[in-house]
Length: 368
Ligand code: SF4
Image 1 (cartoon, helix red, strand yellow):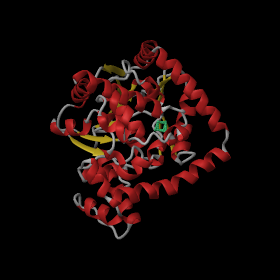
Image 2 (spheres, helix red, strand yellow; image 1 turned 120 degrees about the vertical axis):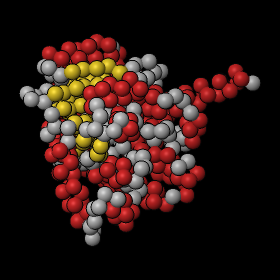
Image 3 (tube, rainbow, N blue to C red; image 1 turned 135 degrees about the horizontal axis):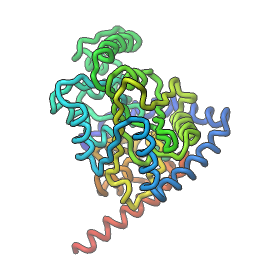
Image 4 (cartoon, rainbow, N blue to C red; image 1 turned 60 degrees about the vertical axis):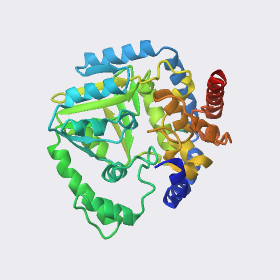
């Protein structure tokens, strides 16, 4: 789908506005009821800036802690390397259960593992719908927001799941997934925050699928962008609380704190993919709460189709520049500043989008 098709799709606009209506009041309430979250956000911003000043130091520290606990650790310079490492770990003809992870979307992992002959299941309900529809997530946290109940009924029928209403369909998906969890060989997750002090992986969720994906299998594989490293467990906790609150669900239903455990093989892949060398360093402070997307007037019209292959919306314009390169999509921003206003990390996205426009224009001028 291109941006012109997206503009014609009412379901995208309706889904985004419905989610915005449900969540924006909740974000305000979270901050009113728990004002300390704003201090947490400041602490996390400061710590992320400190880590971004010296990634090599913090990556080495995180790697040596994880290795000392018996985890296998890898560093992937780009998406291709990350896919290859994952392919070697998983092998062929395995059943893989996967928690939702934007980093795995970034490296197109599921498609790669399927090509190797594996059976890969997204375990987050929205992400499973997107997988079965052969689509891409419309929002980082609410990937299937553009589908109606009737659409979902048709999509789930592909794997034999029926249901009179959303509740019944969800219940039947739960039963279906339970079987997959029990027979899976490999479990996978992303990472919301990683403590360089203890090697602990922090993950929040509302469905309980992450804890099943990461604890039942003999092999557990974690993907993390290097920007998820924080110096301590305390800062990781603060980061995931702020992420949940600014998305609109606080406290999150589940908080997972994962580490290498006996009888489970744990592999951790750190992904660079343009992060260390980018000129748009400020975007690496992002905690992926998805707030700026829902509030953005352009995203409200075109959804995730405005941006790059994986990341959409205002944050996506910059994340895509980091991982894929700059595109003319930056000229579609209104530069209204709403993204910066609502961002818990106070990331100045309009400034970076303006900088991108300047770079593209000077490239054109040089060609004339
Ligand atoms: S840029 Fe800010 S508002 Fe947008 S997803 Fe990242 S942290 Fe959230």
